[in-house]
Length: 378
Image (tube, rainbow, N blue to C red):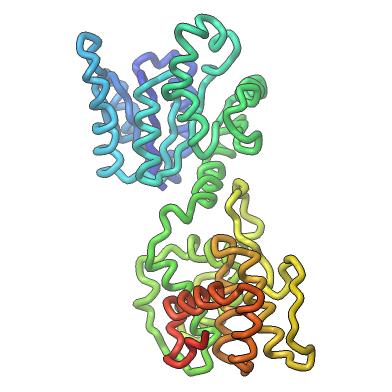
């Protein structure tokens, strides 16, 4: 794991913030690649200590000139170049009320890099309240609140600081972390953040592997050996996370076996700590989804036709954004393997206003499952 810490000024080694960052370097030195982004050039002896003891690689953003306010505009560009060349997994910002820190956070977020902010007491009432209207409020509106709200989590160092951050209402309480032991907690917190945001940096090849395995699992033909080439360069941690969120872990395993691809030991995704995803999909079988009852006029004796109309209605109720890969697999099975009377189903779909939904489903299935010619039935 590659971690980039940002702190404006690291020169004063007696400063509490600098010492806290130093403890974090110590806690992660043996298990991660540490980088430090700072504004002011460090003395040679500090540079050497950071490099020799913690393996820290230094990067500098030169301080803007106060005589030239336009120099602040170039901070974002400098941060972007560093993010692009370094490509860290996590950017940990140690700052409050720092315009440069906000630019670093924004540059990292635009590259879909996980960002964590440690305010180091900067949100305490005695800091926020003095000169609030003239000093704090403009900065809150310009960048402070945005940096805090858009980060993956806010990491606090004491219960009092956690309460201060909570009282500001900048993040959901579950995303305000309390770090009391860096050696024990820091890496798990980074991993928790990465596992929450995995979809942002998952490759198309990794998603494609899951889709191929699912198609192989539900295919009625022999797939044969796909070869180990399929697995080269893939992150199976992300693959297992994606398969779990799409509710197709069992199909992933079946499909991989059918393709004769050896998978690593299965990751127990359900037990992994992750932050709540407000955009999580509707898990479970499509047929079991609770939806508004529809008065289907097809006779109960025509089970296949009744099932077809019901599943298409359920799909409309769930909505495309909430449908999992398992739901699409159920619809594939319906269209590919269930023998229903297409004319009767088409008439009922039209009566219920589901004809357009059925056509959209067919289009998606044709794209992802490569359904053979002749299944475009509506």
